Image (cartoon, rainbow, N blue to C red; front, side, top):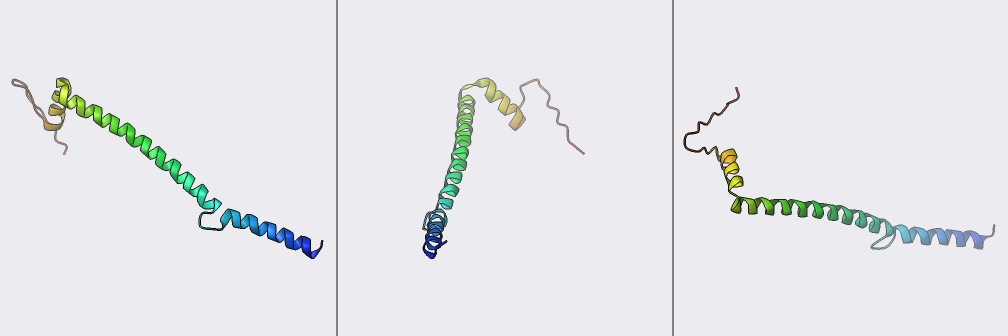
Length: 91
């Protein structure tokens, strides 16, 4: 192998390394950013589902008497006239 050939191979390896890891935004950085982007998109999709669920709950709380009664009973311990409320207190 001649010196010129070794220098050419070394230069080629150097250029490949520079393309992969060099510069302000290297290929490794690009791969990391793409992974982070996908994770953020997954989080946003989950939050959209949660927002839709909360919007439906808010609508039901405003318009559905059965849901209003259930929440009043479960959250606030409210009862109707003539009913008796029993609370079990753990030891």
